[in-house]
Each structure stands twice: as structure tokens, then as C-alpha cells.
Image 1 (cartoon, rainbow, N blue to C red):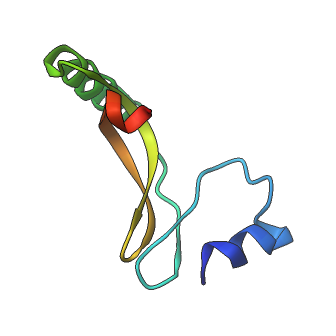
Image 2 (tube, rainbow, N blue to C red):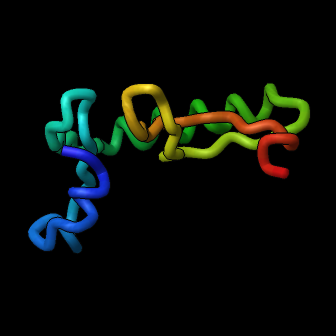
Length: 82
């Protein structure tokens, strides 16, 4: 399955939870825990304190050779945001 198919599939619209596609095109549901969110926040805070010119943020889409993935935490430079 590809994201274009996920978007067009009426049964997958307005779901109350997050879905992702793995590298083989299978739908994967991994419920996030409170601990997961806590760790994301701690990492983002640490990155913001370490980074000179940029910003950390969570749940960001990244296009890869294996499709679009969602990173838990990333840091983007000022240049990236421009």
C-alpha cells in the first residue's frame, strides 16, 4: 500500500488513532504511551538547549528512499526553516 491509497481509502479516514506504513506497505498502529511523549519532550528540550541556531520539534514527516516516515523528534536549522 502507498500513502496515496491510504488517503483515498474511505475506511481509513477520520480514525481516532495514528497509523503508519512500514517499508513493505503494511499499515502499522503503534499506540504512543505517556512515557513515549515524556521522552520526546525531554529530547526536544535538550536539543533546543544544545542547538545554536534552529529548533527541535516532534512528529515531523521525512521523505526517505523507503517512503515518508515520521520522526519522534528532529532538530531543524534556521536555514532549513527558510
